[in-house]
Image (cartoon, rainbow, N blue to C red):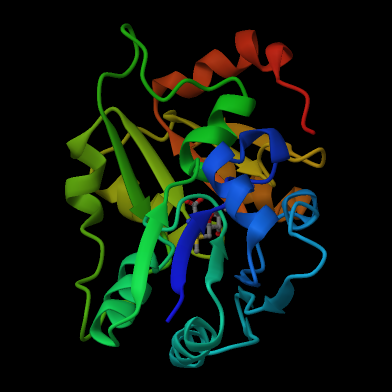
Length: 250
Ligand SMILES: C[S@@+](CC[C@H](N)C(=O)[O-])C[C@H]1O[C@@H](n2cnc3c(N)ncnc32)[C@H](O)[C@@H]1O
């Protein structure tokens, strides 16, 4: 039996890949990767490794979760080093916890290699520090893609609105109108600053900055789309001053 490494690929800029993750890509026998892993990171994979795209994008499920797990189990029976490469961090809205649990249940050796999550890196590359002594001393990370049901209750937007000064939303673009409405109903001012950061840390990064009351209209006007991170709170005002210091993507 080999071992499965759940590796975080970071948000896209290859310079943000961890040394440990890169080392594993260079000696992997098999790499099973997701849709949001950037081409620059895929280029780090050893040429002799078998590469399998298990990419899942909204509405385009190229491989079901169960199929992916079965594939990892089968590959671990044949090879020493199997890398499961996921965008950002595997344990942050990446189903890494579920995959690891299933591998453990199947008796497969597995280890996680954390990555830099897009919820931190995309705002940073847009000049938005998630905390700041004057504007925000607490942060909430939440999914905007509510798959409420058997395994998960729906997001309590009332609590989220008042739980911290900065709110970071993953997968929030498709539900943005609903989310903004819920936060406004919970009492957030329509003037609350909001930023959307698309393809954060990649050369094609784009930002849309506005206010809670007008952002949906801005999105409709510009056609701004996923994948993007949404940041809400006074820290967004730092964008004006700091966005000029954006690091160069690799
Ligand atoms: C299934 S979640 C995976 C999150 C990932 N595990 C992480 O830690 O970044 C996918 C969502 O992450 C966000 N995302 C991932 N990469 C991104 C990037 N480079 N720029 C902006 N948002 C990104 C988007 O909200 C996207 O819809």
